[in-house]
Each structure stands twice: as structure tokens, then as C-alpha cells.
Image 1 (tube, one colour):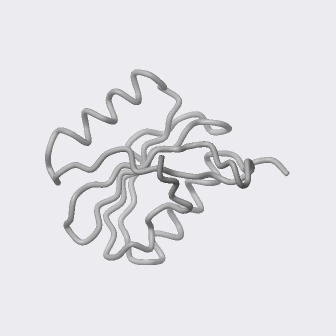
Image 2 (cartoon, rainbow, N blue to C red):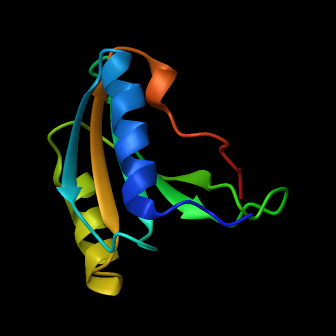
Amino acid sequence: MRRIRTDFFVSAYRMQCEAAGAFVVFANKGDATAGAVYIRIQIRGGPVEIYEPVPNLDDPDERAWTLAETAEPLSDAAEAFTARVLRRDPDAWVVDVEAPDDTCRPEPIVTL
């Protein structure tokens, strides 16, 4: 089985998060078929957690994530991280989420 297109994945993720009461914005729309997805999520006014994609060794057809960085809200650290990502990979998607709880935290999370 092949991994679903990136635009389908981010659309489904957005609908799931919005159904849970989150606010979701695409800060950067990347390649529709195979762009990497970076998720910046802020839960209940806490720090901004930035998740980046990693290989899923258990199931290569499924996405996996690792916590790349944690930044204070309204700081430049999250924007600086995203700017570095987009310089390296302009086809990447950046999804911003403000969530009332951890329902929108991506899974599975892999600790490197």
C-alpha cells in the first residue's frame, strides 16, 4: 500500500483537529503529492511544539513524527525554525494548530 497524497493528509488532519475544537491554518502549502509536513501546535496557551516527519520503521506507509523544537509563544524561535525548513525544502507544508487539548498532537511520535 502507498502513502496517501500530502494534500489529502493535511486536509484530513485539519478536519479532525477542527472537529476537536482547534483552529488550523496552513502557514505554507507545499507540494500536493509528496511534500513533507511540519506541524506547529500550541495547546492551551502553552509552548509551541514543532513536529517534523521521520521515517516510520514499523510501517513505512504511515507517517511518524518527532518533536523537533519547543518555543515560547510569540517568540521568533518557531518562525526561525520554519524559515530554515522552507529554505531547505520549499515544497514542505507548515500547519499551525491552536488546540484546546492534545487531541491534535500528531501520532505516532518517535523519540530519536
